[in-house]
Length: 506
Image (cartoon, rainbow, N blue to C red; front, side, top):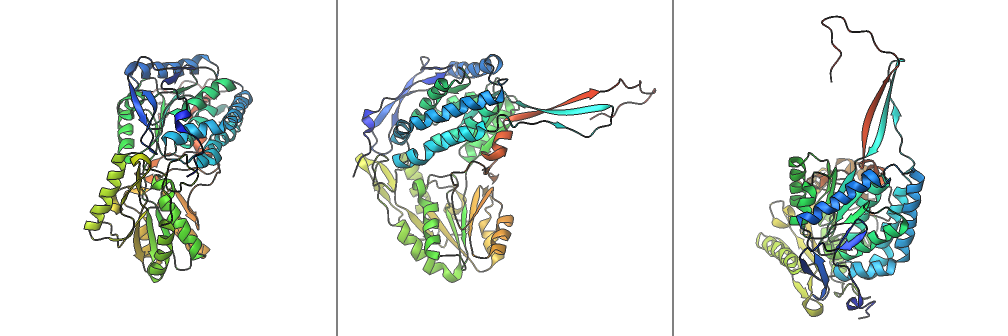
């Protein structure tokens, strides 16, 4: 295989980025392991309570004293544009830092993930000078205004599967809206975002406006959520952890929370789907992209019974064409699973589901990569029912579960999952059928004859049910980082109310 870089040549920073400086703060260190070859990339600080307090206090001080929140909007936008240019300048380095410790292949990070970071900064920078208030309808002697203000200190917590992209979805709109940010990346994928933070300083972002807090979620992440100086929390991760974040936020200050959580996204294929060969390729990619480590993975195929055998045969052909390897290898098409525990969880779900009566059509086995790295063969399970484990649980691996339907109503009923509602796709040439399904399926995003987000920043993303609430990206992804204030101006002081009468109370 052709290696695009040598991960052992990379210099990485092991500390937090707080108030414009990298420092471990005397915190204990632990090793960061590369999933591609199980080698040690470097160490990382595990944030203590003191480091969490220091990071949040830095952001609070910056919000109150740096002028970022009150800066002329176009000046703030200009800084974000310069930051985006620096991200593009260092795209190759960021891609190496990201792919070395993640499951993201270098070429994809270089061509897409890094560009999402710079694109997010430019896109949300354009919103800086487009924040408007309103004059509401009142009597002529009264003026009522609404003002939009930043929350203050935003805490962002992101997972390991798309570290740069999911970080940018949070810090770019939050900072464009005038907030200061403390971001905690996954302890598994910590390095690229630290360099992005250094570039912010180079672009002219004041010290303390953007801080990176390293460490484990159960300790550093929990302490960040509970900090009394945090005003708003945005989290992407598992449904169970999201519920804990929400509970902690409620118990420690009633902070508003936005959550983007797990999914069991259906790919519904009707017999009249256009170009069944192309649809099969889309379905296979929806289940196996990034080794299935995607929150909106198309992990359920809901197929019309009349084309089941023929279509599944096409899907299997695509799912069995892969090449395992390191993220820095040019030929890799199936990257590693993030760690051994996750691989075992995937395999346990598959074997349990087989014991429950599902049929294995391909995959279902562990694969050993470079130096024993963890990979899982793309797996297709037919005859899945709602009682089976693979239907109920988010696998976060390259596993596709198949169900069949006879009618449109049955298709929509099967597409709706009782727990999750992050995304769905519908394949048909009938526009009325497509729109009816899109309206009825309870999911935050529905693709027609496609699967997966495109490199577009205008469309919001977020789930229904236990897949979360609130939106990232788009106008909604900007507006959530500002709060509304009502201001009343009375033209003349009203006469005192007659005895026994009172103003209407809210």
